[in-house]
Length: 191
Image (cartoon, rainbow, N blue to C red; front, side):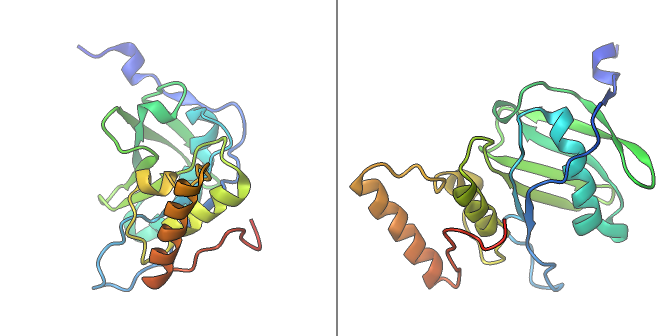
């Protein structure tokens, strides 16, 4: 028997926000998939207020017509307040319902959006209370096509260095990143 709460569709009362989002450029076919497709820095931990803008932006820039609409989003329970199961997303051309699934087992900071054809987009979700310079730098790293860091490791780079040993570890990560072809940016020119 279906639980009525499971079938209820949540509707955001505010218009979709413009997300703070960095996505890597499309990869030529044959190069395989990058570890992450980019990074996103939400303004709050309210999924109803934050997800519609993200879903519309991903639909426009990443899924496009060849993958179909985003139909499902997987989220980590600890990263959000509230747990709606279905969310209506009102776009410029249509309104659709997107299924939301909540997991304790997802890595910290990971959000996965799935398109109608099964294509998936994995994003680093930067914590709301992160400083701007660190947040933009983490999103740039996540969006870099040569990124080999999983979301928990990227989250560890968000200004948590407090002592000399931590600063040395952060400096070592920066040198490793740059030696592998990355470009560490402390403060992006245009946020």
